[in-house]
Amino acid sequence: MAEKPKSVLLPVIAAAVFAGLGRMVLQKIKADRAARNSRTAGPVDEKTRQWISDVVRTPRQ
Image (cartoon, rainbow, N blue to C red; front, side, top):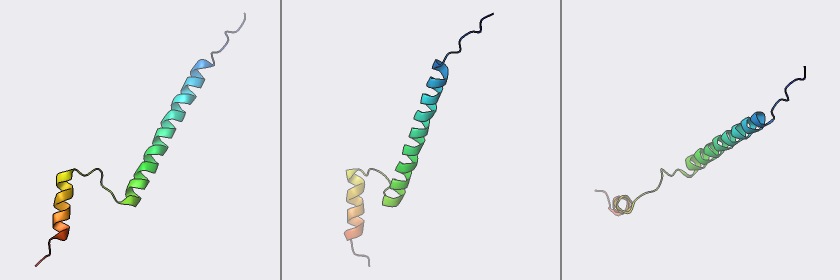
């Protein structure tokens, strides 16, 4: 009896999926490191930016 030829498609798709997931994880790690090094919390809206500016400029007594 002849053996069934094994499909190469499934391992190729699995490798592509794992490579994509690995790439996403590396991008997330790089983004987290960059955010930690720049010490920014994220986007700040105009109201919050104005409040921070007022607090910094107002002299304490």
